Length: 338
Image (cartoon, rainbow, N blue to C red; front, top):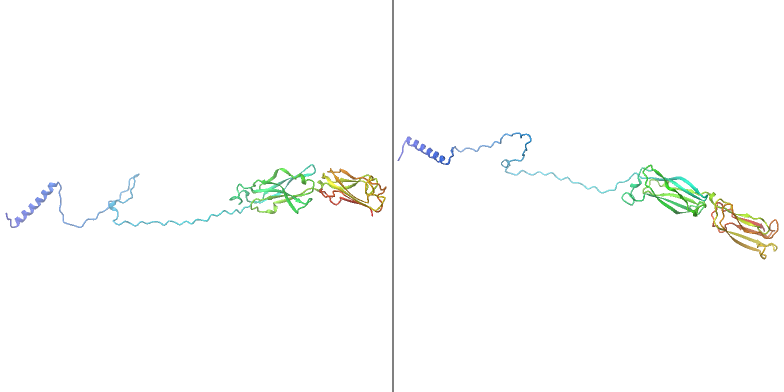
């Protein structure tokens, strides 16, 4: 069939629309056909405050992520310099000082002492630099006692006779040391020797000038051997004794008598001996207590008043000089006439 004219065009349009509607009905969906236009911009939904206690997700949704990855910004790591290992400097030093504490006498021949030890410095000796990192646990200081020679009062040489470890002392603290008085050795008793007490240490002691002191034994504690008179019965020198005029016991010694005679009727020997113009007589003398004497020579014939001219003699107490005495200048006695 062939349609012409306006009416035919209208029918054709109605028929086309009817077919389109029928196709849409088959799918259960109504489609609207609109002319092609520019795509619409998407508008983000308005921000809504989260409810109290709700978890907030701050991450962006994949659709909101930009198509180009954003650059990652990193902070520089700070550089640390390792300080060199150093041992702390200890400026506060200990200052051990010694002073006289007390003195005791034993049997009038020996002395004993105690000493006052004080830390006069601001430092603690237990933390001074020593054998360990700071000397902790090491020996802090030692008290050393020495005797000088020669006796009496000699200081040419010092010989150690005793030592003991001192306790650590905090600043300003003092102690009497040792707990019991130190007694001088018996071998030096009564000889007038000089003793020294000295602190050895602590490490880095601030003042060494106050670390030592000396003690002098009394000369009154020494023996003193002299030549004494025995009852005179004639002969050169008569009778002679060795006497301990001191105040301390004297150890064994030697006596010597020397005689020279130019008189044929005066012998230097004993009455029972033949004539002797020269005599050297050595006699051992035992130990003598104070004021005790020992007869070393008997009188020999020669008449009252002593020997005539031409006879001389000399007597020595402690001839070998083995006894330390309070006076060494009174050991010899001289007599006779030339």
